[in-house]
Length: 241
Image (cartoon, rainbow, N blue to C red):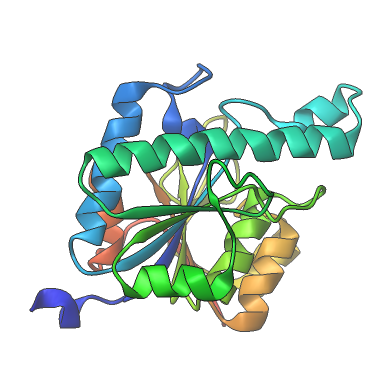
């Protein structure tokens, strides 16, 4: 009954690998994983269709490995496999929470997940299943931010939620600069011109061209996903000017 009052019907949530673990640590923390699954289920139970793109930085960061001298293509494929581990973990936690879930992957691992097929993903969403997208775009040199933007366009999401560890977009790093100013609203072009760290340029450009707004918010605060999707003004919204 309350579904008519919700601002969004179908959304794409981008979560980093850091969401799966305790700050400063690596791997997967089971308690954090369970809490993450319950937050997603809470949104799903509102009647919102939700797709999730997972990062893999808690396990392996391809870009950092490449900077250290590893072949970039090889490192990026390893990063894609890291997202598969997180995707499987999240799927398991959601299913334990009795939330119907499907895991799709851009790389062929048919024993673990079904291949990404846009029409199949949209049908899962329409049937009320949470769809997790792992494996990045399936290509090296593309980030999971770009994957999130791409999947948001493909599944016709109304908004892209970028979950971070800070409460929005600032004009400087708030962890370093105490005088950093938070933006409550930004235009896509301003993000690109000012070089603000929202998402990479390819991801921003995709959303700008297709007029899909991005909401950047702090996911470390319990309940924030629901707050964003029920219309509370938290975080920073990036949209067409």
